[in-house]
Length: 334
Image (cartoon, rainbow, N blue to C red; front, side, top):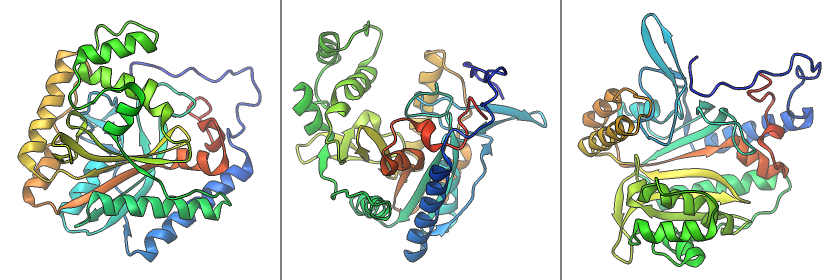
């Protein structure tokens, strides 16, 4: 494997590094959660699928960094999510599908992130994003009940409402200078090199997200620049927004959902914009995901899809503060 930030090797002088990061009861709790999730989807006639971890292309999103390796003279990428291959299955006519498996993102290990993690991802053809988020809520509340945790149905809050309540700015209309003034006043650091999108992310992560309801909230109607692989539409106030929704519980982003973009030409244009951004900002070059574009051109159903971080959900269910507590072996112990 190659990457720009090597992980520290475990101390060979520590005789305890062979042991799991998580306790045995926590490892058993993960097995219980996996059984519960598979039963949830079996009862709803959603088919479990498997897709490759190593693929010839990967996410173009400039905010994501992929691990890669070479075999038979060709570069392959460990997937940041199974999205691309699952969408190819949808284009082939699989119908509603889900996958429970590993994903990889080349980021620093932290309290909330391990470079190798577990995702639950599923897609619902002919469903709206609203209907899918109702199902996300049902799944999480069902899991909470099974673990003896009481959670109430999650309120819905638009990105604009959350932003205005916290920093007094309309995120769809404010300028980069407005965001920079807020950042300089309330966050330590030099942010003069950040563009408007970067400032939006900064203010959201440092000021807005910490103020979201602790017991859970579904955030909707993201700025259009955050659409990625989601459709855009108009908000009730006439702003163009990304048809995305995210579930937060106790300060953790648990799930990220899209009303999926089905227009092959628009998706190809977005990929090209990502690749140009990577080139202009000296980020790692990645291939254009041509197989996904071909699948969209073949005919892709109207669809809503979601990726849910299973490790983080387990943290909520067990009251854990560090992702290390719910992993059998972290990257530093693997």
